[in-house]
Length: 218
Image (cartoon, rainbow, N blue to C red; front, side, top):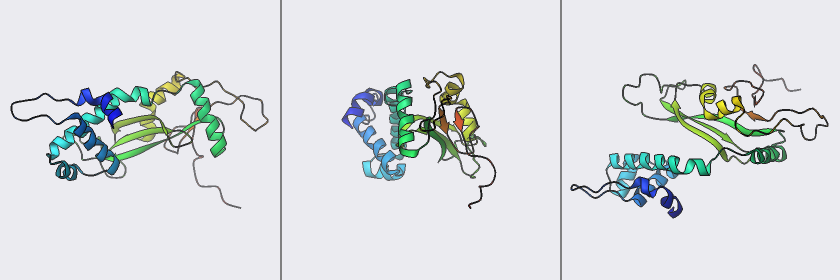
């Protein structure tokens, strides 16, 4: 906690006024970590910390924005070519899937519909949400995240407009050159790929399941 506070603390400092003293940065961070870890409501946290619910809400939003601003580029940077290769090697060792750079999926985070937002956040599950798009390595660790797209957008649409999707299409993300599949005995090079479900488009660098019904078991 002290390490995070040393990085984002300056962004959590509010100006002192004649009406009240500002919330200390350490308290804002503590509230946010509790909210993210336990998923408690703002009302519950307000009761525990003896603060107003609006103050708790603003503290969480302020702290999350500061964490993204100060820590995203250093803690979840775009992988280098060597890091991509290490991820692919781990996928082969653990999951027996060759030349795999990661598994991708989208997650709908339920929210209260913002005022005058219409159907922008209304999703196919009949709830209001924002979309979390994430790419993970063979150990389920995040290597790329994007949060905040409208709930009405599909996973494929969110991916296509994301920095990850644009970077993969433009080949600007340090992806290694095609290489033979390990253990196949075939010398021809094959591309490195991301794996996703049927919501994502089929690309030379993005593999998805075969469409249609499941194959019968023999």
